Image (cartoon, rainbow, N blue to C red; front, side, top):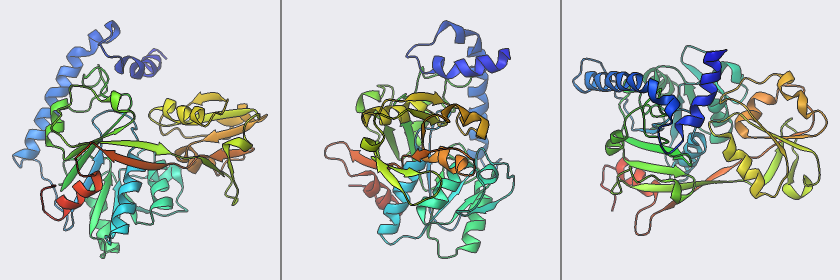
Length: 348
């Protein structure tokens, strides 16, 4: 119980601007983790650990921090843009939260408990083939075998999965930024901030003021916001409503994502009053988890909805969102930057 309580408190401590006193005892473990990260990357760099190159370009959308930061909407945005420009993208993912341990294709009817919530959402919304597997290279090979017309692969997460070589890396942060800047377990970072020197672009899912000064300014940086105004019925019926139809009702909101406050802020921006119930990222919902909302209306994210749809729950609505991208003045957009690199050219 003590360990579980500490795990729940850590994220709140990590995202303080300064290292809180309670984290000081964890610093030696962070230094050890940094050493292990450096050794592992060095082994791949010198060829002692083997990395795999696929026959098509690979675009990795990942992050340096633990937990979700909005990668799934960004992957959907990128895949749709590629499709609009004549590319035939495929998607690979680890399938975090799913019970599957082998390489598997994800289809709209796949159970989230098997393939993971994010891959299932990607399969339902992208129109692209989606494969999951702990070994992303094996997942990519399986995808290309079954879909030989695929000419680019987008990896949902995998910035630290060096077993798979990549053509382009995009690092994503949400409004929490880099927190205290420490590596696990004293901070939220999986790798040191200097790792950003080797990525092709950084995307901030949140306001511009969330960007810390510790990130090098010359690096191409972009801003993403998530927009959504119309709710869709969770039970699969072709029904939708807007926020006006929900105002004045007893509303509950759940969010099992990396930063639940991000979803709750979206609902507040729609002028909705609700009782917020955050859950851990990738939470495996049971009907009992949602019994508190039996006397009202339940609102949730798309990531929650793919797991809650099979449950016998009352009135529930999901808020689909779309990523909207912007660039700094005088700088090419993110898609243009990626497209230039896919064509082997340096962005203008």
